[in-house]
Length: 267
Image 1 (cartoon, helix red, strand yellow):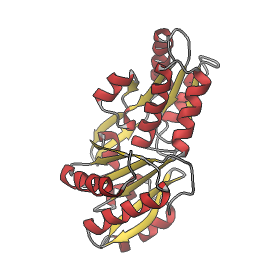
Image 2 (cartoon, helix red, strand yellow):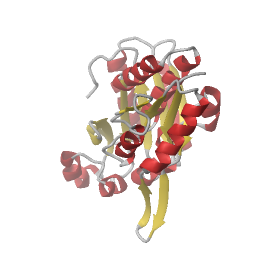
Image 3 (cartoon, rainbow, N blue to C red):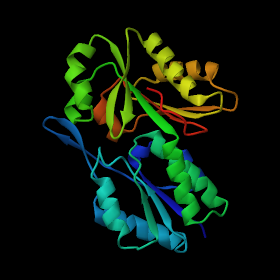
């Protein structure tokens, strides 16, 4: 039996990766309304049912649960409530992250779980991976993200002025803040590569490029990264899941990177 790893669908893991690493996923809710699509967090009942099933599968070796940042969703607080049903057996990690930063932490924890790591070791691996990660977002427009309330106050105030640029945002403490402004997509991708290289310190990284209906642009960014990243780095390209794309709008590209060392965050 092994420690089980649970994520929600915002982690962005493909069906192939979920099967390969035997990670359980619970789908967040995307709802259509009069003012467009919106999202809803998972309930404690839904999560408790999932955790219970995974404990049965893992022989009570424990569950590491990784969910979308509590700044973005009520799912985290529901997860903490659900974990209380299984004292000590379910560890809910406060990710303060989104997308493949969460997905990468789940992959890392699940990998060592399959090698026989115990619950404490799997939880620590997930936390370490999150702490070594950074997430940036490149947008062609800010309207959807501003309406969702996911921009920091300062960036929201500047949003009108940023419309003429190609803004690069950095996820920091649950909010997106401005990390750079460029005039063209090519310059934006060069800036993103620069930000990653500054933090990488010549050590290999895991990078995931996620896109909202702009695969060609995502592949272009991935190729830019492959050309400059240290040897041993891995770059993955995947669609941005619906539950996140609802808030970013089409044309958005997310870049999540896990670094070899914690280091100093790139601004």
